[in-house]
Length: 150
Image 1 (cartoon, helix red, strand yellow):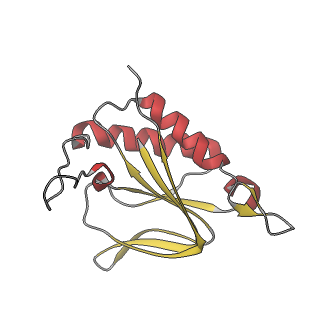
Image 2 (cartoon, rainbow, N blue to C red):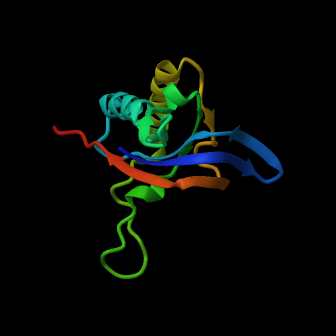
């Protein structure tokens, strides 16, 4: 499972004229699910994201988590994070989990981050064509991945 974590001043997801999720300062998490992922990866990754110390402390050092900072979380599913473009010019998505596998794991991640945060994250809509707007703060963007080791 991959989380592309962006520290944001604000972010929102729109589908047409409808906003499905919107936050102020916090984390925008683009989530990719691998074919071998399980709920274990979702739990681990949610904990890692919630406790990642990338927010400034009183000395302006990245020393606080989104929990410490009092920020929000917006989670957006993104199967293209497992796209492979090493051969040719058209990416292969063979490592991306199929929707029937990926959606329950996306839901498991959202539940796990909700348990970490004490409130439900804002969300995109699984499988939808979305417009994601954000103001990356820093910019700070991290790629965090955990694969099933079986």
